[in-house]
Amino acid sequence: MGLLTGDVLFSVVMAVVVFLLLVDLMHRRQRWAARYPPGPVPMPGLGNLLQVDFQNLAYSFCKLRRRFGDVFSLQLAWTPVVVLNGLATVREALVTHGEDTSDRPRVVTNELMGFGSRSQGIIGAPYGPAWREQRRFAVSTLRNFGLGKKSLEQWVTEEASCLCDAFTNHAGHPFCPSHLLDKAVCNVIASLIYARRFEYDDSIVIRLTELMVDSVKEDNGLLLQVVNSVPLLARIPWVAAKVLPAQRSIIALVKDLLTEHNTTWDPDQPPRDLTDAFLNEVHKAKGKLENSFNDENLRLVVTELFAAGMVTTSITMSWALLLVILHPDVQCRVQEEIDEVIGQGRRPEMADQACMPFTNAVIHEVQRFADIVPMGVPHMTSRDTEVQGFCIPKGTILITSLSSVLKDETVWEKPFHFHPGHFLDSEGRFVKREGFMPFSAGPRTCLGEPLARMELFLFFTCLLQRFSFSVPHGQPRPSDRGMVSFLVAPAPYQLCAVPR
Ligand code: HEM
Image (cartoon, rainbow, N blue to C red):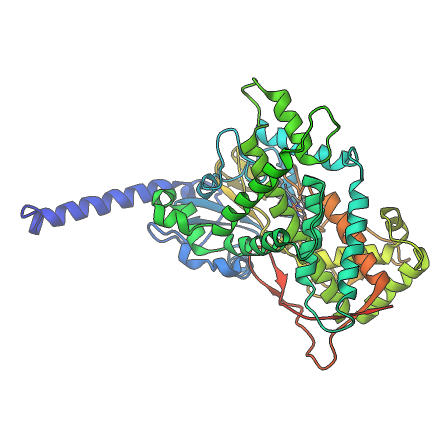
């Protein structure tokens, strides 16, 4: 120890500092490449970590976009990131160059969730054969659902009925609808995966919906960003234990449900649900080395479908009800259309959608205005790619600001107002809009979009067929500003549901 004093200690410290600065410079060398997107100057070691507000990325990125333009770069510790803004830029990156921009960043915390070489789920899987195999499987199972006893539409319609009954129980008194919406949407995913639903007071559904809501909050924490930027930290048990506790509990719960479900699986019978179909594939794939059908991956895929499909749809429904109580004129017009096309004598069906342009426009406008996944899900370039004339090297993380597309001032007449007219022509017919991108675009676009659309249409029309919604008497008008996180939900509010 005595030797490490004075000049020697100083020289050692200087050598370490110079070494770290050199390593740091090495990791930032991309910035000096020709036509690399501009961005704020990074600090040694931390990069721009302290210049970005992870609790409100949309706001931070909006300020940076004003300074640096539609394509700008950031350095998060040693990780290079490029942020893409506006319809033209996001479309060029995700659609035109979809083959080169559809990889996912390697996220070290995924490994804590059971991510391995043969089990990568869908959302976090690298753009390659295992992702393709699982995506194809999920898409075709969702499309062909109905091999079992009931079609997915039947499950959703019946769940909408149960949801209406639960609303009726509040007898017109004020209540917060979000917990019931969470449970209804949870049941739709449960029907897809386990061919069963849970009563709304069942402890499993209560636990699952609570954990899901917690897990969304976990996705935005600074600790998670720091651990993923400096992967060595994940090796420290104390740090690892602090990261993503809710997501780990969900995996454990899903595992228990799968174990129970699998006791009744009969490979000789037609599949009842997605899990049966997956187990059939595991059976077929036995002995093949290169395949992604195994028990570990089943747990990940199922957890991801719950995670990706539940809170997103439930938050959107919560926005829909908030916006109809804030815009009673819109609510009346939707009810008029329901009365005209469906009446009170039968339940809504998907086939009604084509005859209900106003309702369809309202649901689209809810999704555009609510903008619930403002920053999308991160992508990564798998090749050097050019976007809007900028060169983005292979291995760069891409953040596609869906918010900047859904609120693009060059695309929408009233980007910051709730205006169903965005999706109607002068004759009142529904019009599709290219800037409508809440599900993202390109090869990684949300695979649950058809299911989500079905749920939004059937839940929304069933509820408005049965009830008129209003702000509770004497309560202030709730705000239509969201609570910013990875997913943007409305601030908690109450409504009254009065039977029509
Ligand atoms: C309103 C509801 C929903 C919204 C707004 C939404 C939005 C999104 C977005 C923005 C992405 C990222 C796409 C990208 O990386 O560019 C995504 C991916 C995904 N979503 Fe959804 N989603 C919804 C509902 C669902 C449902 C119901 C399911 C399934 C049951 C689902 C399953 C998935 C999966 C598996 C992915 C990953 C796709 C991949 O990486 O290939 N989502 N979703």
